[in-house]
Image (cartoon, rainbow, N blue to C red; front, side, top):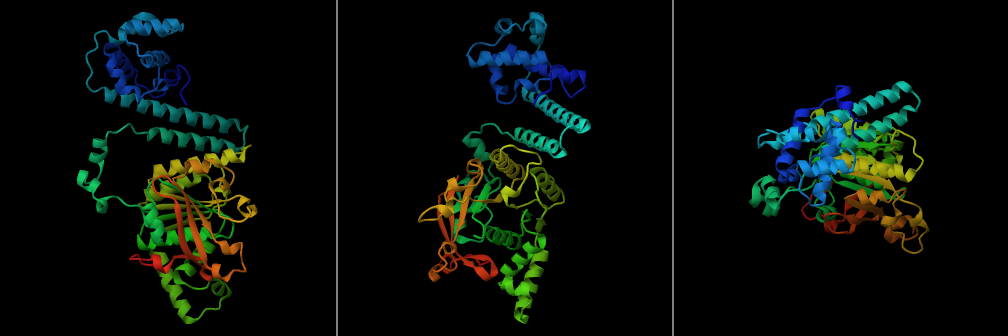
Length: 456
């Protein structure tokens, strides 16, 4: 989004015309300097319309491999009938006439980029205010537009240039020795599931992890097991957005799973003293842990963004965010195409995970195709409900599968569960065998997989 022609000056929007002139003049003096800024600035970053036109013609000359100077730029502008609109050859000459070689061109580029960002924010705010004052649209639709704009601006702001291997290693904490030493490498957050941690290296900052399953397979239980482990074993703040269950229901589930108490007995009130003691111990652990739960129905990306930023500002920067579940979220606006809306949500989740610098574990529904499939009911990537872009945006896609749901007469399948890693951007795909304890709605490692990892 860019400010309309002349708006920057007419409306008093932030700009620095001198910095823009110095940049264009430096390129005219030495077109080799165009490379220094080409990947950083775009035409709309210039506040003056004539500066945008001049820069755009420079870009076209560079793409054709031609030299950039007063004559070639003037000729290019003339070819498009724009020379007069930039005040002619006289103005081009004035850009580099008497201009010394500027060594700190990066500083001027930063000034121009910062002013461009401020203009974008100001224009977006003005448009939002105009839409609100006109009151011709549904408030939810207006808020949806603001949400999308702010996320897009945030993404553009965090773009990073290309880095050489040397720069990557130098920026790595501990330098080359730490980079080559596996024991010094930054590891992801442990999930508490041994085989899953071995295959993924844990949950990493900026990753979008999709956990999908058909209803009643246990995806919420699995996510809560991970949340408990991260919050009580690693003492990392965990934010849980539950769009389906209440805060009280979530806490009850987590307590029973942690205390290994039958959740049905808990709800019915038939507890013995031993079970009460275990629940009290688990409750004490829960109270001291950095768990944060929000059960607002129909939460949107903007809601989550605001709440997570507030968490971070209070010193509880999230180490893990869990969303239960994607299809219940809204974009705070009407959408004709639900697939498109889910695509925007999954993309927004990925952007949020990068901005917040923590993994996002997002639960998702699967289509009925798994149930109608003859023979093997195991989920596939094509079964992800309502949007193929979920697969595209996710770093990891896992499916919870319990065959006993389909073959209830098979006692040997009771409690047998699988986590199928169908996609992993930075690791292998495969299957993780787990145990599901029905009475506690809790997943556990198989005894033979525990190794040195403490259970829980």
